[in-house]
Amino acid sequence: MFFDESAIPYFTASTIVMIMINTNPAEKPKRMMIDSTPLLGDPEALRARADEDGYLFFKQLLPKEEIHAVRRDLLEVVDKHGWRKPGQNADGGVMDLEALNKVTEEEMRLDIGVSIAAYKDAQKEESVHRLPHHPRLLAMYGTLFDREVLVHARHIIRMVTGHQAMVPTPPHQDFPLIQGTSNTWTAWIPLGDCPRTMGGLTVLRGTHKLGYVPIQPSKGAGSIAAQTCPWETDWVECEYEAGDVLTFPSYTIHKALRCQHKEMIRLSLDVRYQPVNEPIEQGSLNPHTELDWEEIYAGWRQDDLKYYWRKHDLELIPRDEKYLQPARRIC
Ligand SMILES: O=C(O)CCC(=O)C(=O)O
Ligand SMILES: [Fe+2]
Image 1 (cartoon, protein in one colour):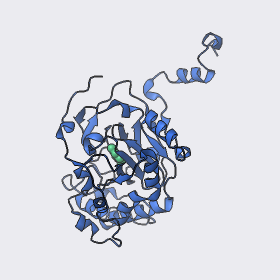
Image 2 (cartoon, protein in one colour; image 1 turned 90 degrees about the vertical axis):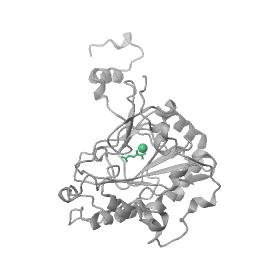
Image 3 (spheres, protein in one colour; image 1 turned 120 degrees about the horizontal axis):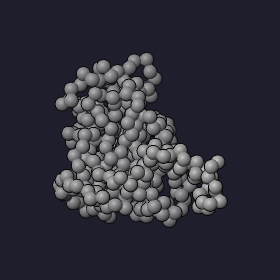
Image 4 (cartoon, helix red, strand yellow; image 1 turned 45 degrees about the vertical axis):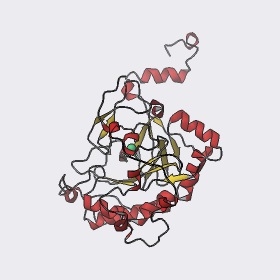
């Protein structure tokens, strides 16, 4: 060791080794998400963690089997459209990219990963609309908000594929896209195991404190990118398993990692939650596709979740286009 450690009292030996290895900041090893499950019984500590980090991660919040049931419903849709390689079990996500690449860019939903027609079929699946109301999710948000929880109705079903026109979701805040109260939280729910090489979601820790960050147009889901400053590098990552849940408030900057397995489909849900007594942008109660609720509900077996939000006296507010106008961020 050529450092005299006694001369640098604030550094431990391991810190010195880290500094020596990480001469290039771009190579800094990524921090992994902290599991907040132990805080679920301590609301104050849970809120303090959320306030500090701008995200909460819960290992195995949801039963794996329930996640896999939703996954299978969506893979059946993929199968119906002829894009899944034959010879796999019902959970297998290997795609026939040659078949999928026959779908033209105009026919694609590039924010999703499959065709407009297939996405409509996916949106009709009852299980997709039931999972967001899982008692374990409602209990977690009830603890976090300490108020009655409203589940937004517009769920996004990511069916991210290696279609030639797809690009990973760029860094963004959800606020300009969702609006309503900034106290709206996104749950990102992987529908299957999603290691980093599969392109899971990563969060820029602490950015919830920035407020609204000006946007630039971008390729990829949402079509907007938040501009980050050079020192904002604290991206936290995760090796997600089916049953894990990530959640963050709507100013937190996040993005998807690049999927390194082009032939695999990455299935996940984005679901939003907020306290019921705060304003909601009215579009958050519409389907995330060109179908009306009656068309979505047509094949459902149960009625309990149809128009569930109508039982609340909600403060509906219109969408404000100013948040989607490009502007430069001064760092
Ligand atoms: O799954 C993705 O690629 C994007 C998800 C996202 O941005 C969200 O859940 O808000
Ligand atoms: Fe997002």
